[in-house]
Length: 114
Image 1 (cartoon, rainbow, N blue to C red):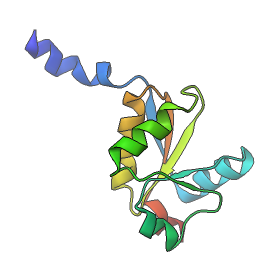
Image 2: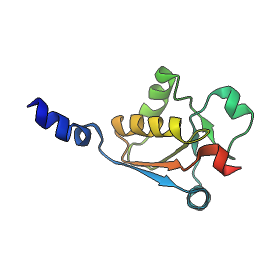
Image 3: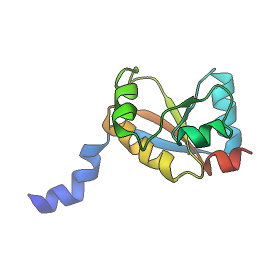
């Protein structure tokens, strides 16, 4: 059974998809659909600059991160970004485990946004 779990375990962990969007695609979607993206960096990083209307939810603060996202509608798309794309991928995987089915990530993060 562990062999099968190894082969198929990833499918059981995630119930949706992570879509990585370039800057133009990301900007178009958040502007067109009036979406507030989630900045998963630290408060200090957020305060030094962020995407307009972004909400800061630090992925490193696991308790607050989980508490915040547990309250949201899992059927609505979620847009995340970090500095370069690494933390937002971690956040996106956490969101899938929390039950979100549509997670969008900014390719290259805030560094690519500027």
